[in-house]
Length: 113
Image: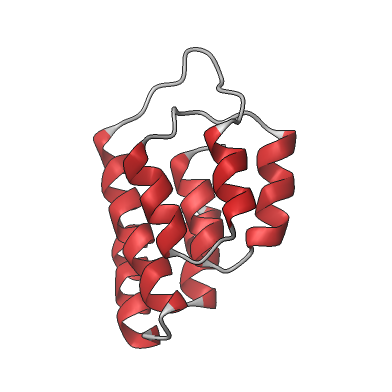
């Protein structure tokens, strides 16, 4: 599971199903403090944060700057959505989508924001 999938699903408000996905799949990145803060800002419960913190990591995964840029935008989208600032949340989700227009997770986040 990539950063984009994790934050996109979190921004879309599907933290319950997200816990199951994290448990079943490996992460394609090492979760850092920034990601955990970004996730917390989207409203998931502490159990998801702990699950991400202790999740299995896929060996040989590489991250790119685009993914980090998308992470920033998705985190803001989720935080704004959680705070019920829906118009601003949609703008951030659409900015993330512009960086990866064919990504189904981002399409879902925009449609639900």
